[in-house]
Amino acid sequence: MLPLELRGETAQVRERAADMLERVGLGARLNHYPRTLSGGEQQRVALARAFVTRPDILFADEPTGSLDTSTGEAVIALMFELNRDAGSTLVLVTHDRSVAARCSRILTIEAGRVASDEWMAAEV
Image 1 (cartoon, rainbow, N blue to C red):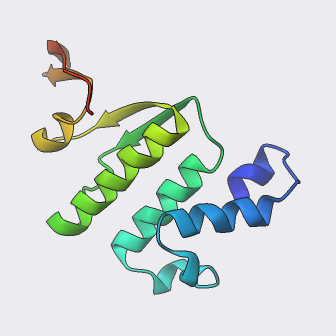
Image 2: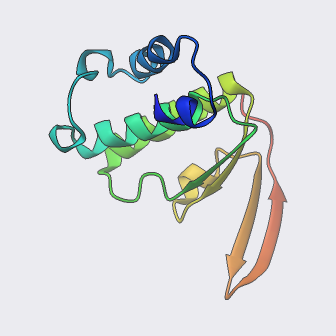
């Protein structure tokens, strides 16, 4: 609810937040404190918080860096799904080439300089 409230929104804030938690598979954990959630659940809450405002641009810096492989893959799939539905521009920083391969444009940075700039085929 906090991102919506910080934007000054008051209408149906609780319902919108609950709907987004349901969307990321955490509707049943609505009344749990963060310390009682797993790392993957906390990442899904972060995605819900990021997308509930339907941002024009979303920056994600190593969103799966602290997750195990299977949880990380699930979080990435969810992030791309939410991004597609929101119609946002997603700027993603990652060292994981398989995650980068899902993006429409890849900028590779080496020693502080752009080493390559590739446009990829759109994901279907």
